[in-house]
Image 1 (cartoon, rainbow, N blue to C red):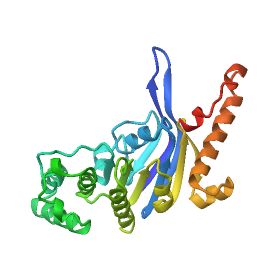
Image 2 (image 1 turned 90 degrees about the vertical axis):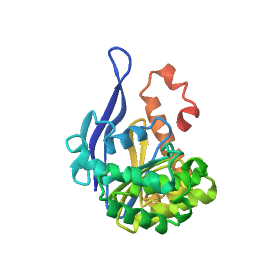
Image 3 (image 1 turned 120 degrees about the vertical axis):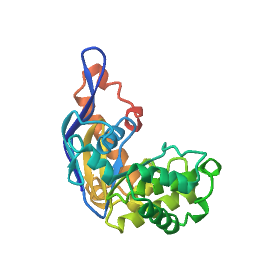
Length: 267
């Protein structure tokens, strides 16, 4: 469902140079699979997710989402993708149902079909109490559930969750996680980006670990922990990033290599 092939993304960095946020990244995601996207701040996760959702074009390489190219068939890609982030705004003056309906109209859903879909989403995810409540009076967790319903209104095959549980309390975060797991059972193709290791361990079938724009490890949590002989995902992540930082230090001039500190590992 998602094919990322040798993708690079550069940004201007001064007058005559560029900064590469992504460098030769390749991986895929299949239906009924949740792939965790992991990396410290600055690893390139946001750039990658924006490319997948057609907000940014890749500088090099190709990306296909649902069989469509993110540059040449951007409109078709957007019709197949639902995107949820921690920063998705809701409209305070709309009710939950009005908010979801507003976005459903963007996708051109027929009125009757749209109303049936709204009913289905609010019942299925136990959100009926939010249907007629103003978004401005909802808690952060309630707003996030309505935001997920908005992302699902056109029944996309591919879902991207970018720090979707950031700032939520434990009850609201658990509810979001349960929604993600239910969507996997519907054969949805899901990318789940988070810094919370317990979430990755609970719901992800595979992990893709980025460091300074490069894919440095990929596999199931068990495969990676066995390879690196670590007992937890947190230790595994720190081990992989530490190894990458140390290898980079060897390529630096002697004076710079000597300045390597733990702060470079944790971002």
